[in-house]
Image (cartoon, rainbow over all chains, first blue to last red):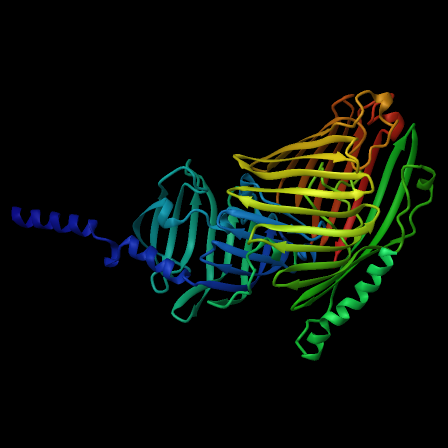
Length: 247
Length: 356
């Protein structure tokens, strides 16, 4: 009887220590990355900035390369027509068509919202690489928008990150992050990101709709909607250059 | 003569240049016409006299992209500016129609060439850019658009972030210049040589980057052709943001500027800001939310401590519809540069703008 109890306790302990569904958190993150892996992207997208019952609409086209290491965006809506952004590694430049000039965006300004949205330049630049700057653990499984998800908690290894910790809900079938809560070191929820409209491109899954809510602001929501996206395409020469900003 | 040549060239060159594209029946997108309707209601007070000024502006922008270049035109028209203001000498009615810019840009593997009326930009954009060729400051509208100059300009890339910008022009604002620029770590930097007019030249360097806070600076030396008359001009700026607040400070030094108020207007110094030697510009922006922001700007003449202080508010009413309120007042008295007696003691601007 006593032996059975010991076996049961050992079994439960081992069960508890085993990763959920037999998959490790490293494998889940690797699958998330596999979805993101593409050498290049060309896209056309819309951004809706909502505050109370008012909505601003912006539209842009662009190219991306090396998982966000480089991107070039041109705004095409009337209000921001011709405004361009160039990102190379962790630096960002903006072109102002009314001045026909380019300005480097200071590092501290990267915390500000892009075009007045809930998306900061830092969010856009994806500076805080999950696998490099965070320790992750698998917390269990939860259902988000009728999809069964792995729930992961990631905590920063160092202080030089925008968000000290993150909670991610990763779709078990597609390995797309359906929901992400981003926290400050104090534990305050700073932003909530949700992804919808998951589409399959070859052997990868990609979310075409995203909402970003800055929890420090009242009644605001930014929605990003990808209208068209192509992967692994040939990007025109000189796209990621200062010369292209002036064109 | 040069201007006429440029205008003819502006029209003929693109026809030759793009005729090949037309023959090849390349799918060229149609020209895009966009623009802006803007109404400014300006109030100012000088010596207890009140002036009102209403200006309605129509802006039309035409852009046409080709695979090897683009055309850009920006023309403004002004409707029925008020009359009373013209009795006040500091305000002049804008020409109407007014061609702000009109140029062709041709792309090639070795660089891009621009022909026509265009902006020539050297140095760091912003307040007190010592390499700016038109240093007038509109105190009721710090972001007002300037007219381009007729020029042929080139951009030669050296690598993805480095290059050479150059131009030649017959315009009164600038004759010829060249700038070489690059990027190292988190800093942009460059050097400029510019011949603005006969006997007015400037050579200098500039940088912009980050050391926890944003920092930018530039230094230049103005000299005549014989190099027997010269003076230094420099600026140094810092910027930082904390939560919803964005702070900026710029110091400006012009060696040729006067130190005593009675000397401010004795000699007009070409290609410099204002008339005194030392200035400081401060700005604080509160981006309250996506639709509403407030700003506080201040120019101070550090020689006589007179200031111009402006308070602004930007509100996005809806898509493409913007409201801007701004008021400014001067703190100086007597012969101070920013003197209430000389320039007026209060201005206010109500601007409504629709982009299409």
